[in-house]
Length: 425
Length: 149
Image 1 (spheres, rainbow over the protein chains, first blue to last red):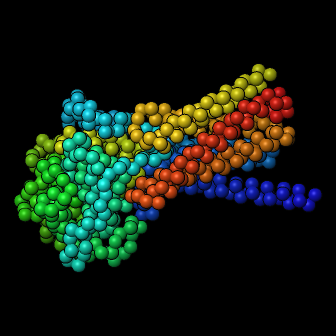
Image 2: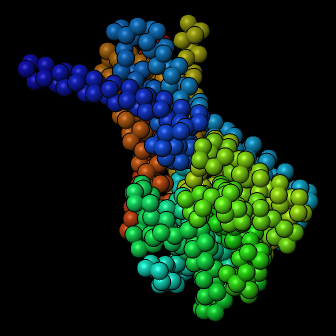
Image 3: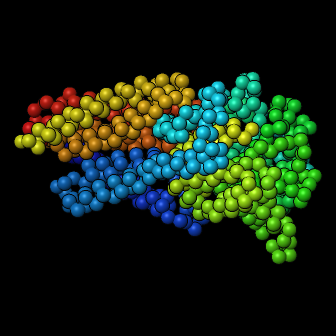
């Protein structure tokens, strides 16, 4: 008798505990949904939005069973109908709202199709041979890559190759290159220089620079150099992992100089080591790395940067990902009135000229850190000069929404990016 | 009487479909885990996977309405539905952390761990969902288990 009473008591407590957990999940769900749908100014919420928007498909399948569990735990006899009704409505709302990024995938695809049709003509797919197409994603989006993860592709990887030892810092790069014969693969040894983001003050290669994508592109025949550059040390700490040995009092001039040094070493040393094709080079970077990609890619032939980069590289395309189109004042001496030339030359849209390479931009429409105006300015300045600039926009995508390659945005992005790389090489 | 018959038919239909889709999802997923290439065949896996999850959720909802929880088999099925929901939540968490984990690890044991999290999360949702559907289906005609008799 005593044992039965004890068991009944434990079940009661367990149910109380489960109810509490379900209510907590609902509260977190409401917060995450607000973060997903509405602009945020708080730094913590903004950082949360980076991840929330990428995992909403999982979250909807978290809220649905939580709703059912809570309904089962709030028994009809003891809880009023309106309370059970509210649980059902809130649960279904959370599930439905978190399905929005998945539902909006066709919108992203439509935008990308339009951009490609404008840039390459309506029959642009005919320019990609079947032999290359076999290596590419067969569809813009699939659910299995979303829920079961994007598989890592097989390639050669060398990490932490030192390329810069001066000014009190050490800079390394990781290189990803194909295992097979380059000429059999669509990339054909083309070079991709990847520049990580992190607000010019934080971040790192590898972990912070979408390494699954690096492996994927290397398996397609590209030689991907994921590089470090000197970061501005503002004295604070960041939630983004950042090595101390790259920090210093660096300006944008220094960063572009260091990356320029890498291009020269690429010409003299690394091209031979890794069989890299210098006649087909792409520059890619996200956020602050996107700004540097814009400055380097569009300013490569600009007299202001004369002598900074290797002349042996032919830049075929640049891929700025949510790029800021401005020069942050803390990274340049003086201000825009006392030092106008520097501020002008470190703003990507000011560097557009007819000889610039084609540009593919990723832009989330829920990006509270770098708004779409930046991408639009770059696009319009390039279009005026007659240069292709394709802006792929993604509803509900926040800043850094490309970090998990299988998510709703990255799959569509990857589908079009691999074709852009092939068409431009 | 008509409504009761209809409810029984809905539960029967959902459990039948749940069993069928679980088998399809499981077979395709095993194939995908062994040969992880991008193929249109696996698109079917994606759809069956989420349809199975939605169907099982609907089955839990209807079961809760029509189950006679005072009868010992009804109590057992009710307990299984609790376990299914708890395991489903745990599996989704396992899968999401596995996906995040494997997105940021270049190689080695941690990458294997991420993949194990994804695979085990998936297997738990599908296998326990399959078990739940079978239990419902086999007890559908048992007297006293349901309130629609």
